[in-house]
Amino acid sequence: MIALYPGSFDPLTYGHLDIIERAARLFDRVVVAVLRNPAKVPLFTVEERLSQIQKAVRHLDNVEVEAFNGLTVTVARRLDARVLLRGLRAVSDFEAELQMAQTNRTLATEIETLFLSTSTEHSFLSSSLVKNIAAAGGPVSHMVPEHIEKELRTRFAGEPL
Ligand code: ADP
Image (tube, rainbow, N blue to C red; front, side, top):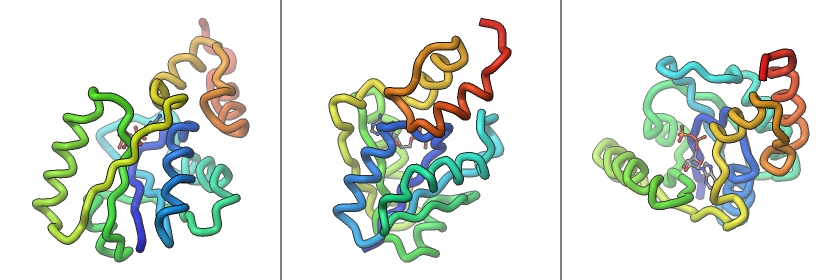
């Protein structure tokens, strides 16, 4: 079975990577789909995020990464993915995730959204938190893979604290 894991991944954190690694043990194929969202101004371009994630999942044979526009269920149908995978951290994630899952179900009844709960050590982690800490010159090496930490450092180098 194929699972699609959609998100912004701006940037990928160890929380995302943990979900990907656990999903790779459950499904035949996992496709990480980076959303091209014209409504959001991301820190990293889609191409940068694709390459960051590809590097981080190199050790996983059954994981692929691609970019997409538009509806998640349309991509899932194209890839023949029956599962949309999302991560749940805290109750605060629940409302929006439930709304999205139910909406996607009205758009494609054959596709199920499955949630993996975060591992305790990653429950506080979010891409926004990582960006805020990195922007203020703080350490993020325990939150993101090394190559992403480097890119964050380069991106924020020279910015006033
Ligand atoms: P989106 O903009 O679609 O929410 P994100 O990159 O923020 O994209 O998140 C993608 C998915 O990964 C979401 O389901 C989110 O709840 C989940 N996620 C993010 N951080 C973590 C974490 N630390 N542990 C588990 N799941 C997470």
